[in-house]
Amino acid sequence: MSSFISKILIKTVTAGLLTTALLSSCSKNNDDKADYIFLFIGDGMGSQNVALTESYLSYKAGKIGGEQLCFTTFPCYGMADTYSANFAITCSAASGTAIATGSKTLNRNIGVDAEGNPVKSIAYELQEDDYNIGIISSVPLNHATPAAFYTNAGKRYKYYEIMKSLPQSGFKFFAGSGFIKYFGKDNKEQSSAEYLRENGYNVCFSEEEFEKADKDGKIILCQPYNKESEPANYDVGGPQPEGHITLSRMVENALELFSDKKPFFIMCEGGEIDWAAHSNKVMPTVKSVIAFDDAIRVAYEFYKKHPDNTLIVVTSDHETGGASLGTGTGHRESIGWAYLDSVYTANNSTNRLTDEENRELNWKANIGWTSEDHTGGAVPVYAIGKGAERFCGRMDNTEIKAKILAEEPCK
Ligand SMILES: [Zn+2]
Image 1 (cartoon, rainbow, N blue to C red):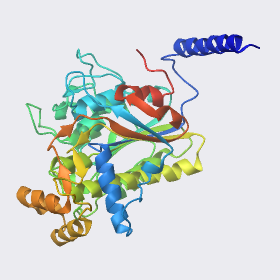
Image 2 (cartoon, rainbow, N blue to C red; image 1 turned 90 degrees about the vertical axis):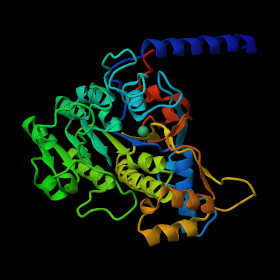
Image 3 (cartoon, helix red, strand yellow; image 1 turned 180 degrees about the horizontal axis):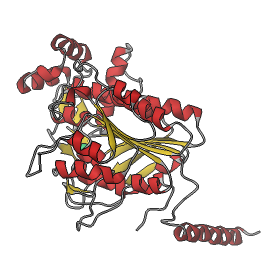
Image 4 (cartoon, rainbow, N blue to C red; image 1 turned 180 degrees about the vertical axis):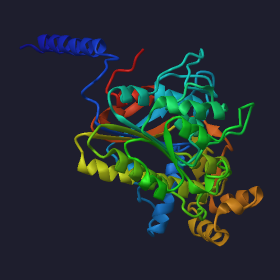
């Protein structure tokens, strides 16, 4: 066969494959999707926050570099754009909506597209395919990221309305720090727990209560210290209140509830990474990335038992803080981890430092921060398991949903 003819044949075959791919776009019930799906979202966890954490882990191991988090060892790696429909720098509501539903929207919009029309999250689509659904976060469950997976409330600060929209989801399991209801003109007359119980959920405020709960029912697990009050400010990386349920325990509880008898989708957010990075605090950022990684390790252990049917995707909604390993001028070539670690240990938590003390600490440790808010770059995506190869290379955050579902993005 001449090389010319073989080239034509290759072109014809390729065109045929492309046509097939286009025809099958947006197809439902795709058999290529995994039975057990984990989506981990590190809120505010840009590449540099991951780099900070791995640099710290290397220091702890007595090395210059090379120590890795569990999720950065995953074989497939890509980058996802994060910009929203109206700004170069997204907020968590717009990016959460993009990841959950595949639609870009305006900053502060949640569960609706840029025109305000409700959009459907991946969790609802998978529930229709008989998947158990679990929504987990280290921060309040009516915060933007977890809410993007169950609400169409429209605006992220409608906290009470978002909470009230939770029961309509019918999702089997929620776990988080609790529910915020301040802000705006929300009706505050009924407590969140009361409302959610009246609407079909068993609301547990400890792991003991969770153990005793009817496992055939729908469960919401909240931190015990938020039983009488709504979730207040946080103290990342410091000593946790009594009975604190770690993010990894929340994932373990979800797996105990779901087992491997039925397909499931678990979205798990490391929410306080963003809060720590907003305040430019290195050790709380590092500690919250490690806590997030601990939760991913639980999924990774599950994956090792079910490697052919499990997909784990780890990404972020945007970067926060614009951190860098190294700052200023003068060829400062090492990072002051020993210094940071000692100040952190002495204070029990760097959260107790004033802003000025914290700026000085960062400078001395040679760690830069360029923003006290979000930054606009692409974020990393890591994947392992069935279909993980779809997450290699550059993508938009609106493509993540279709990639998990093994569909072509709906254009
Ligand atoms: Zn965010």
